[in-house]
Length: 62
Image 1 (tube, helix red, strand yellow):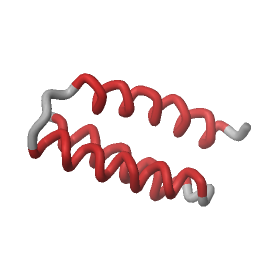
Image 2 (cartoon, rainbow, N blue to C red):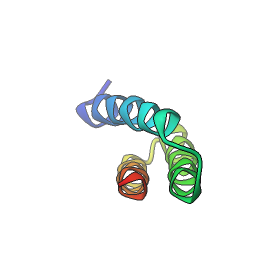
Image 3 (cartoon, rainbow, N blue to C red):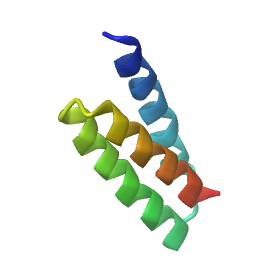
Image 4 (tube, rainbow, N blue to C red):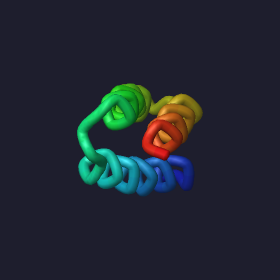
């Protein structure tokens, strides 16, 4: 794995855990949508988009 792939995989794990622990509501809903978009971007090997969506998911939870 390249460093970008490793970082994205670690970040995805962290964001997924945060989404799972979040209280139900609009913030969680937005975060989950961004996380799902990140999963699609990760599957397409688009690391820039993956990181962008993961950052948006983390921001939605704050």
